[in-house]
Amino acid sequence: MNKIAIYGFGRIGRQLLRIALDKGLFTPEAVADVKDLKTLAALFSVDTNYGRWPGSVDTSTSGFVLNGNEIAYVDSSKGIPDWGKMGVDLVVDCSGRATKREGAQAHIDQGASYVLVSAPSKSLNDCDAVLLKGINLEQFDASSHHIISMGSCTTNALAVPIKVIREEFGIEYGLFSTVHSYTNSQSLTDQPMGDIRDSWAAAENIIPSSSGAAKALQFIWSDLKVTGKAYRVPTRTGSIAELNLITTKPCTVEEVNNAFRKAASDSALAGVIDVLEDQWTSARIVADPHSSIIDLNLTAKQGDLLSIATWYDNEWGFSNRLAEVAQYIASRI
Image 1 (tube, rainbow, N blue to C red):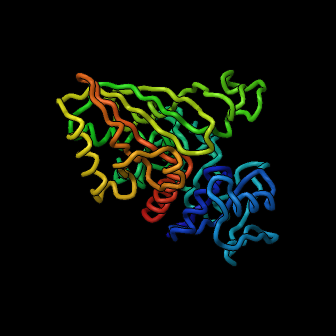
Image 2: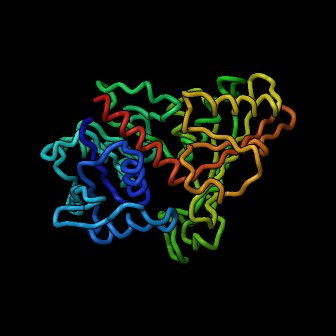
């Protein structure tokens, strides 16, 4: 398989590496970040949300030593590494700074052939394709798709029920709200931030926020009339999105839930969708690898309005898809 590098070793980059190694998907040629190697190794070894990594973690003069195997570390504080010199074909950018084309293009300018962005691109002009596993990943074209966006965790969570409902009943229009765990874009204590609502303590407030998922979903389905917003809440990980839709065809709660049950047993969405038959809270889905976990007990109908709720671990579920899509692309270029 072609060589992969991870650029940015924060929340998503570290979970991406855990999953890639644990599942045997790939071993990266290198990890690049602006922070010091010892601290990054410690954060990889013990994670507040997901516990201790079961393997051995050490460092050498050149990088990480994980289960006795070396992975090169590159200090990227002075710029993008020379990927061409390292023989890297695909860079998975987890820095959050490649949402515009120039940010992703910088990796290609340094010798990489492909960039997988772990965030929603600002516009369709800022990437060559938005590709999600179980949704449209088979559309990957190595000759024309060099900058690929994976959207966000919420994009992946909502794309699944949207795909199922579109195919079974059609969608006229809709709204979503996601109740999302706090993230590093917020502040631990009250202090001025770029987004004024983020200026209040993340662990003490319910904070309304924007969501890039609506735009990213329209990059996949240009005719989709669905928009929405987010509320950041004081949980460390684990989120739920409510999707309210007007369908083209009439449907019942049972018909909708049966469509989700069928999709969960369909190989095309294997590992991407799951359903919950019993009643749970967010603790149930922490470290769940699925992108979208439909809570069947919360499906409801009022007149023509259909309401669906889907859980997702906003870090772990997304990182699983990111690792799988990276492996898929690297094996086809």
